[in-house]
Length: 504
Ligand code: NAD
Image 1 (cartoon, rainbow, N blue to C red):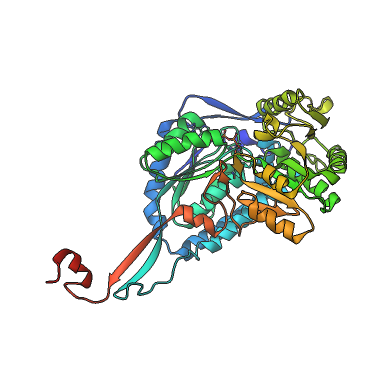
Image 2 (image 1 turned 30 degrees about the vertical axis):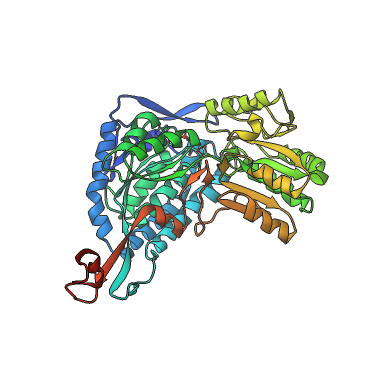
């Protein structure tokens, strides 16, 4: 036996976390959590039913008045303890994340978990700093001020690519602002959402503030979105499912926050530091085995650098060590599942008909043959309107295309339905400034691609969604603003009453 996370023992009670305790789902349907590195089942659990969702929403509703009534300082204290508990459990959480997703432990221990501890600490502090305009006598006769109030029970749905971080991005601003929440993780990756919820309880966050329902998207997800006692839906996932979620949420006039797909351009101008761009492209395309909504997927390289960029990027990709996520030297783990690996391979196979696969384009054999692995892949020669350039592949696949003028490079970067993230590579400050101004995306990096930070917002333009995760901007999603206006005159018949009473 090894020391990997023992999910079946740890979550023997079930994969639902409702009212501060673990329990089994009641749908009668079993879901397996599979280690994608080996194809072995590491946990089987009973999926949530819609009745379990009702229980979770009831628990969140019951917890709301008490949690919302705490002072910001009291909520902040609880969240600082939450951050401390997460830091204490960092190794266990990182291992669980690596096991269910196939992420290298290097990534989970250096990125996923510390990022979440930092987010938690950030929102613990931010809970005491909700912003609004100064109270003042704007009309002359009244004192006006703004209250920023929590909205109630939030229903959140998260994807499988960063299960812990996506849970954190939804839960932390919501509860920091005084809301309570029911989170539905992707059914294939529930483990770290459960550990996250347990840590909240251990930190003293009251039962029912943070609940988890592990269930299918179609039944449990849709029931949660449409639930009459859920006042807001916050969804991260694909644009296709986001559309469906939006339909249901809109029908019941709910607040909606959508973080959807991406197809990030990586624009290399001819004065760029080529070595920096090559390193940035490989890291930016392969992060999390390419299963990152902001991953570099379309590199547009100005003609003078194109051949060297392709040659050096392909060569660097070939040095990336693909292997067992638990081996300390591994750079790249498998994709999240065999089904997803086959989907990624399908995109590349279809692209062979119209483009050139320069490196990769296959699953490795040998010791890795049972895992959902796929080699880092670089493709050239694809047309701008081809599937591999337009559709989100969500795997370790980078397409490289040439451009001639700056106008063309920026136009190609913007020629996509998505608008989540982009990068521009240049040493010319005017080009950098133009690209960051003109590229339509929620984040533009200059001479880097991927870093995120708790203090700054993350969110899409266009079909990548709307609303912001992280940063104080996320409170705009998770609070409602009330204008309170006091009359200061104590006059019975006020000036403006002339509109009703005439000049009498
Ligand atoms: P997905 O859309 O298939 O699933 C996301 C979640 O929605 C899962 O929990 C799933 O169970 C649930 N779901 C599925 N059908 C549903 C329905 N009919 N009603 C309600 N919920 C439903 O996405 P995925 O494959 O898990 O994740 C990958 C996608 O997520 C990619 O498109 C990626 O770009 C996107 N993503 C976006 C961001 C961002 O910040 N914009 C971050 C991470 C991932």
